[in-house]
Length: 148
Ligand code: 4NP
Image 1 (spheres, helix red, strand yellow):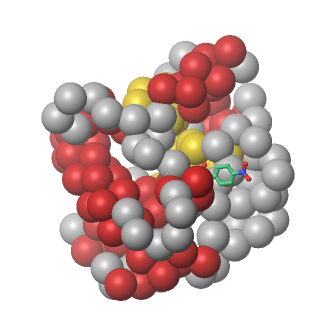
Image 2: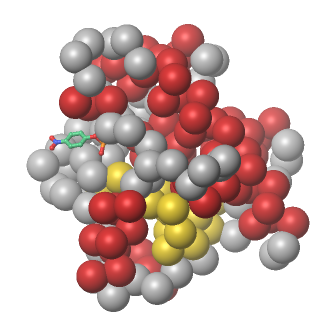
């Protein structure tokens, strides 16, 4: 199974989702491959934002080696499932013709958008975003993996 996490810049939320998922998959010996992408291209080629790297490390996950890239329509075929971090990500992917997309919030109580911490005023709040993404990612993998 192949899953692609998609946010806006691919430097905060989707790299966190990717790092968390890869860590969980490794620890549980699952046969799933993961990637991340952004609907925008502003940060293509860049490593995750330093606060995203910092919060991940605090939870024991190293995302320093990830590199941002923009999503393409090839991804809609190459991945079984695309997972948007918020409603706008999902809507943008659907506009590009993607039909195999869900929102990460579907796997969380209340179907929330994952807030974009890039626009937070400083580092406060990153741990909350991390734990929200972590819950969603684990619920998603447990649900989708068992049904595949
Ligand atoms: P992300 O956050 O979508 O969680 O990676 C963003 C980072 C940068 C920008 C937008 C969102 N930006 O416009 O530069």
